[in-house]
Length: 224
Image: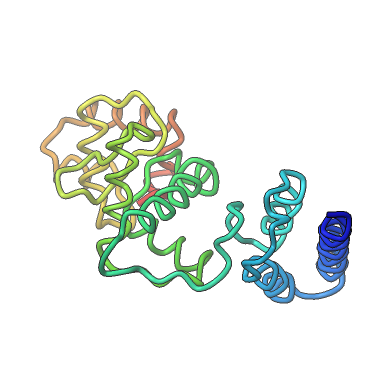
């Protein structure tokens, strides 16, 4: 019994030392080295030390320094399965919630197109191999569990992650804006048939909510 305790203590000490070595590497070497170090630790399935909250917190901080998702255990290659997809979609939905409410919150105001989600995901989580339907299905899980407001257009191309009060005109303008690099008041009037006052009022609401950027006459939709 005593030998067992000694082995466990030694394992914890060795693991802690490996974390120190990786943290040192982070200061001296490229981010790629840090990512490899984190993945090597997480690939070792025999590490019972992950039951320790303090160890998990330290690994989480390492992941953030490496530009990885904060969730421990998602460093290795993750491939979308054809069958028994429940667990995979739960993990994916958790990642998307982090992206929508934290990683892209300041840039998009919490309203993001599926295309932007896919683009951000591929840039920040290159170890994942997704199918085209994965992100929409994971979003539906978040919506079903009432963790996010959900899709705001009929074709399910724009997702609202953070509750904000949008009127019908604001929702309509977001739907229309998808597909345009930028818009202006005249173009919006042409597409919607609204008068100038109605367009400007809608623009003002979206700007106040941080969902659009108005640069002189041009209007940009960073979340789309």
